Structures are given as structure tokens and as C-alpha cells.
Image 1 (cartoon, rainbow, N blue to C red):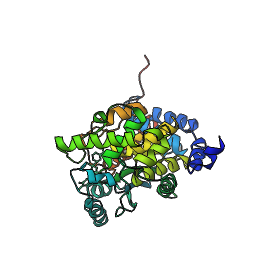
Image 2 (image 1 turned 135 degrees about the vertical axis):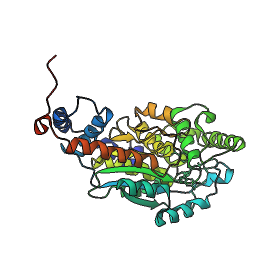
Image 3 (image 1 turned 90 degrees about the vertical axis):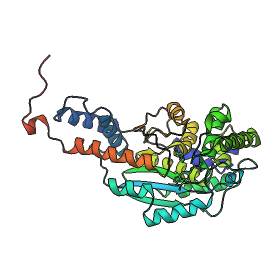
Image 4 (image 1 turned 90 degrees about the horizontal axis):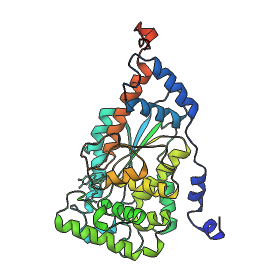
Length: 343
Ligand SMILES: Cc1cc2ncn([C@H]3O[C@H](COP(=O)(O)O)[C@@H](O)[C@H]3O)c2cc1C
Ligand SMILES: O=C(O)c1cccnc1
């Protein structure tokens, strides 16, 4: 490490990226051994079997749990909204925080339906970050402090974390992050978000183009991309995903916006998302391509484009089903069911 890097506000984040634990292979072997005894044809639960192995490998538990799953929604506010890049006004951020608190949002119903814990992180939604077209969203110190705040999401006892967001305008900043990390034209990365019309989509592409031009000399470091083009909820999600890894807590990612936080970590270290599952593929156009670049196969693909961790919460419901089968099914011996005939 050069002395420059050591002095950077990102030095601690870079160090944590070198300290990430790997999956526990012994627990995977134990889970497979039990799976082979359950009253079903081998492999017949398809990816559900893989999900249980994934939970166990990261939790380090041969009997994985989903007793304390936690859905975290990170809320931020974006200066770039002034450029007409969203179909909704920034005032919706505070109003939706009130709605989350009152139990009226989609994510409240999904958490109630599946028995998931729910926490909202208000990252100063009444104080928008800078317009990424004219300057950085956050300075590097602010970015690191916000990542550290996001690390608080991983409370003791949490056995799986779902990350999602609320932040009018944040599909624009996510598109800017992808364009910075992967190249390509702004048009390729922008979608209709909350429901932009054609003129709005043009303004959105123009904003992404301008942002990349403004920051073009500083985009080789993924963490600088996060600070300059992201925002508080994106930085906090990156911190939460990293903290979960360090504590061996598996993570379920939400859609297009949450995946932008993950993509920054992946660009910093290609193994940084080994503990992550993509909850769903969002209807926001380029999400499928991003997931492919990250090597993630989404659990669900339901044409959803809400955010709020809604896709991740649905996937967690499905993980609960997968785990219940693995944990509670009878074995062939217990049930007196005949095993597979000899070939
Ligand atoms: C009422 C309402 C609830 C939402 N919940 C999530 N989002 C989603 O839409 C926003 C991103 O889209 P864009 O970049 O087009 O603004 C984020 O807040 C995201 O979480 C919502 C948006 C609205 C309007
Ligand atoms: O997929 C997402 O994360 C998304 C899509 C549209 C609007 N807000 C979020």
C-alpha cells in the first residue's frame, strides 16, 4: 500500500476488504449429507437446496437458521432530482418514511406476511446530497462515515440481512455508478424508474452523461465512484453488505438501486459479494445485465420495480420455505419410505 492510500479516508474500508472470511465448506458437506436422506428424489427441490447450502456456508451452521431475518431500508435524498430525473418529487422521501413508520408501505406488508424484522435508516432525507452533475454527492470522509453508519444494520443475532432503499432520484445515481464502473452510453443504463415519460428519460440520460463528464478524472477507484456519484443510502448499503460479510451474515440484495452499492464492492474486490444472493431481477432495464456481470442469478423475476427491499423480502419468504423443507422433512428411514431403486 502506498502512503497515499494509507492516508485516504477509504484506508479502513480497503483493509476490511482484505479481511473478508470465506464460506464454510464443512457445513455444506453436512447439509448435503442430510439433504440426501430427505424423502424426495435427489435434487428435486432445485435451487431451494442450493439456497440452504448458501445460508449454512455463510452462517457457519450445519443447521442454518432464519430465526432473525432483518430487512433494512436505507433512505437518502439526491440533489440531482432538481434536474427532473424522477416522476416524483423529493418530498416523497419524508412522506414515505412516515408511511413506513405507520405500516402503510408495500414492504411493511411483505415483512408482516413473511415474519421478517424491519428497520429503516433515515440518512438525512431532509438534506439532499450534492447534485452529481456539478460536484460530488459526498466527500470521501462523508462517504466513509455513512458506510460506517450502514454497518450498524448488522445487529447481533441477525441471521440474514436484506438490503433495500428509498430515495427519489436514486435510479439516476445507480445508472451513473454502472456507467462509471462498466462504461457504455448513458442511454444504456437509464430506465423509467418511478415512471418517467420519454422527455424525462432524455433528461435522465443527459444527467448521467453530465455527471460522468464532471467526474471523469476520478472514476478509476470504485470507492471514489461511490462517493462522487452515489449518495447516502447507496454508501450505507455498501457498508451494510461489507459488515454482514465480516460477521458471516448472508445478504439478500434488492433491485437495480441496491445492486449498485453491491457493484461498487464487487469492483473493489471480485469476491466481495460471495455471501450475497440477488433477491430478484428488477424490471428496470439494465438490471439483468448488471446481475450477469456480478455472477448473480436472481431468485425471482416478477417484473417488480419498486425498491424498498420488496424483491429481497419476497426472496426471504422463499428462503424460509426452503429452510423449512431442509429442517423439518422426514428422512426415508424415519418415514419408512423406500429409497431409490438400484440402477
Ligand atoms: C410513492 C413511492 C414509493 C416508493 N418506494 C420505493 N420507491 C422507489 O422509487 C425511487 C427511485 O425511482 P426514481 O429514480 O425514478 O425516483 C426510490 O425511492 C425507490 O426506492 C418509491 C417511489 C415512490 C414514488
Ligand atoms: O429496482 C429497483 O431497485 C427500483 C426500480 C425502480 C424504482 N426504484 C427502485
